[in-house]
Image (cartoon, rainbow, N blue to C red; front, side, top):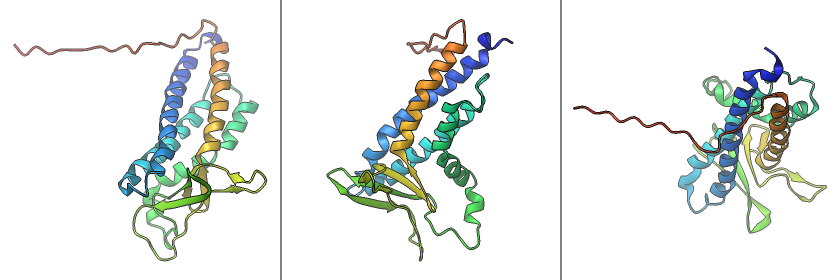
Length: 210
């Protein structure tokens, strides 16, 4: 099949478009949930849900991006995107193999679901760190990374897993940069053109038991 009429391009664009929208949604909620945790600690599960959902969807984007017909693995935009978002692979691998992680001897010294660190919205010099679960002796957790050159924290919120820190703000920016490139790239490669539906087609079925 000629690349210009390869329907796999349409399928990849569909997969990416929905994934990008999911990432938009989860990203928009993470920091808002974190800044409420001191007053509403019951929101901790919601905050972790959004964090891990973001990471999982990002992993899917990375997988789809590497399977797009005609897109070279040497393409600069793809290589930069994969490099700048590689933390997603480490985090996703950890959570996907949680059974094995929990069986380790000696055990991991960080919280099972990681730790959350966020910037005080009213004081850019103060951060908060929280984790769910039992506090085991010798537990370790990551904080926000401070850029001494820019004199600011790298991200408003981060998920810490061991010595790794998943910084949502810069990673989301990398996603947007790749999104701009890849959507246009696919549109140009698929000669017939791809018209993304503006309305959601919904079919309804009513069962008559008489």
